[in-house]
Amino acid sequence: MLKKQIFQFMRLDKKNIIVTAAAQGIGKATALRFANEGATVLATDINEDRLKDLKKENDNIQIMKLDATNKNEVEAFCSTVDKIDVLFHAVGFVHHGTILDCDENEFSRSINVNVFSAYLMTHNLLPKMLKEKKGSIVIVSSAASNVKGAPNRFIYGTTKAALNGFVKAIAIDHVKDGIRCNAILPGTVETPSWEGRVNMAEDPIQARSDFIARQAMGRLAQPEEIASLATYLASDESDFVTGTLNLIDGGWTL
Image (cartoon, rainbow, N blue to C red):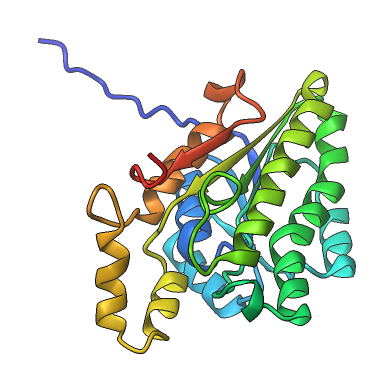
């Protein structure tokens, strides 16, 4: 009797991928998933200690401290990149409040972190993709954007709406150049960042309960679920997919 041999198909084999905000949450889960799918992953974040923890989980992941909002740092970093197949950009900041709670500094900070960082990374890495006539850019946006208004997410939703337009613009401008650009729009994801915001509430237990109660499926998303969608968008399986806003919100926007 012949024994069946099982071959693991590496969906991202031989792909060079840069992941931003990779030290925790969605970025970390995605960096690990990409590496497990055969990619050569360069993980970046402003938190070097947590990057080192990431590397302990998968020694094949390369790490580098990077402030994606710093023009000089990004330019210096990107100048060292020879070839890139995929950019997965997950840098983000969640401001809590209405327009009346958002002063000029908080407005500027949100624009800088959520939008300008995406511009800097894409602006500096896209020419390398164009040289190869192939590349995939995956931007982490949010369902809380132009898709759905969320309470106390004024500037956050504004910046994520901007990112959705950013993705559409890049997709149409470079569709004939072999470049694909897509966005992932999560709902509420159970990440350290989310935990931190919940714990800042007057009643963290009630705040957690309220968050979950608003979820159509009765639970929060896990970072690994976002990573699964990211893997599809980074892989050649999605070669005919560009300019899409991919909701992954458990029915929140239904």
